Length: 390
Image 1 (cartoon, rainbow, N blue to C red):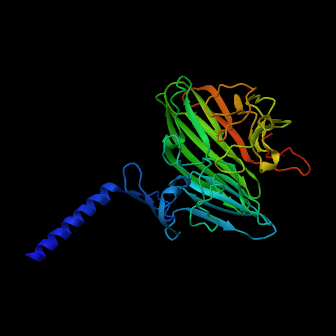
Image 2: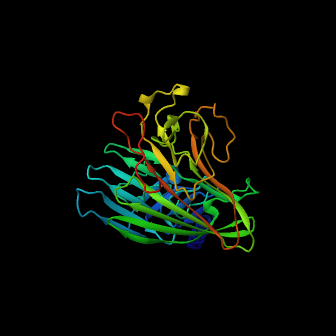
């Protein structure tokens, strides 16, 4: 009888644990198979088990073991000559995420992470050619708790500098500005490596979005040439619906340039001047704009306290944005050019196309060059590398 009670108790305990496992432990398979990670649960779950770790999840990490035995990604890494920059990349076609990394002969590195983050608005993973996220834990350069090594980052031989953060990208109907459609809520159709080799890589992701009941197909193509400190990103938007529809498209970032998590020191720069206050940018007379971690003299920030790193976004003349701006907020800003760029965490650079109306079957395309600017010896002014766009 005692033995039966013990057996019954064991079965009851097993049943309780089984129920708890299925209802209180979340199994989150991202299909990257970059290892095994145990996280503190959220949203009512006690625990979470996943096969990859994004930056937004690192504060919940309890235990993890990175590995690439079961990795589902195209990879490339070739360094035929240590005298030249060496390219490596990883891309998961099915899930639309990966990274590009260049190692320079002097040991410096440029990192571009793509689709490896959770969107802060929708709380869903990004899928496709959207800048953001971290290196997978299985990469030898991975520093999962170092957020400076995320998005687009530069290693100067001693530390990583944050260049671009998770991109703020959105499309919405021209008459529904309060109903943005974020990329993480677009239907991810697929992605692929179009070409790759020691000279560079070209990636493409395809998406489908519904704007005010009309269907839009969105194709993004990224080209990176080995050794460059920038990439070129072409976005093609096609009305796949049955009626004309007007849309607005926005691309921007509060890049936290220099040091992740802080906008302090970040100002704007154009071809002929530094920008210390909020500003609407003339996109006809200017073909690029960027941020500069220089310190804002208008609010007493000291240049010596900042990294002097700079970034830039350049647009092609045919697909130039109608509006561009520096501000202390994202979205559609309302500001004054007398207001200093002073937000501690949200000094923003934004581009906006539209409203543009597309008839069924009609397309609109624009190309951006996005990257890190160079420094000029003896000068406090950044230097944009030539990109071929203008």
